[in-house]
Image 1 (tube, rainbow, N blue to C red):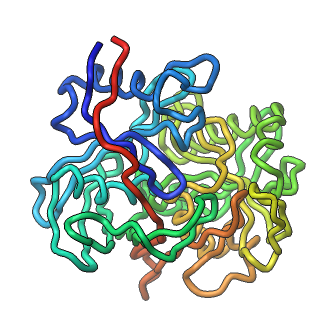
Image 2 (cartoon, rainbow, N blue to C red):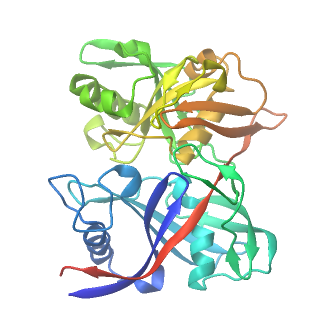
Amino acid sequence: MQWIEAAFVRGGTSKGLFFAQDWLPEDESDRNRVFAEALGSPDRFGRQLDGLGGGISSLSKVMVASRSQREGVDLDYTFGQVAVDTGETDYAGNCGNLSSGVVPFALEAGLVQAPDGRQEFTLYNTNTAKIVRVVLTVIEGRAAVGGKLSLPGVHGTAAPIELSYPDPAGSRSAGLLPTGNPVDTLRVEGHDYPVTLVDAALPTVVIEASRLGLEGTESPEQIDANKPVMELLEKIRRAGSAAMGLCATSEDAALVMPKIVLAAAPAPAMLLDGTLSDAAESDLVIRVISMGQTHKAVPGTGAMCLAAAAQVPGSIPAALASGRQGEVIRLGTPSGSVSAAAHFDNAGKLAHTSLLRTARVLMKGFVQLPR
């Protein structure tokens, strides 16, 4: 039996275990074992009852943070997505939701200090080799908790945390449009599927929901229960990964990215809290598939990626979100409307993406490992 120091943190619409780098074994395989056992994986029942995970991708995550030795950077951090069923940890991408919890955790863990007031922190994400800027309010050395920002999918309100991703294009690929095209055609199982392949903070495959016989407003449970569609989406996602240059063949595609997004024009939809959203509340309706399950909201990096894609002429998001104005896009998710922004400079280069999240350190202490 072994005890490992850790914290349990909500970041946006995700939760995960956070560790200071010094709290963990140096060997990567030993670290991965810690992550899997602490969260309760592998679990063939898909519930992670013997750990702190929640049985779905947004609740089976880890973050590792440390003081940075890089000039002008406060913290380095690494995100790990732990597969519920196998316990495998995937480091292929970043998590925008959980990124909002890095500074609150670091303040609690003593990895960084800051005076009271609105403060900006510079983070380096090792998964993508990209900078992330975080702005939040500090009160008595800790991240403020109370506030008025409401996030779809999270009960109540909390203090806002602003995430900004400078130069996010090509987080894992050749650029914003890895193939150079706003629309590509992927041939899967003898059929052609038009998709937009885009990479801004997160490599993403976007396909119009109607191409698969869907409205795009279906609930996560309805989509997950449609096994033929889910299997086809996974094949399209893997083909998109190869087309983006993220892997040599579709069989080699990573688990965590690219994400695949079902997109549709604005329409009324029944939300997870039982209320009915109006078509006017969103610019683009989306359903994101993450680790083989339909996300109940939207990955933070995915929201920012779609904000950028919607401003690319000829792309699928741009065509479906034709009523969008300015840099902000409102995304209709299963939990409600989520806003994200993308700013292009005068030369047409993607300068930065941003969104607001909330976060809270729920627990700090020690997690017991069974071995």
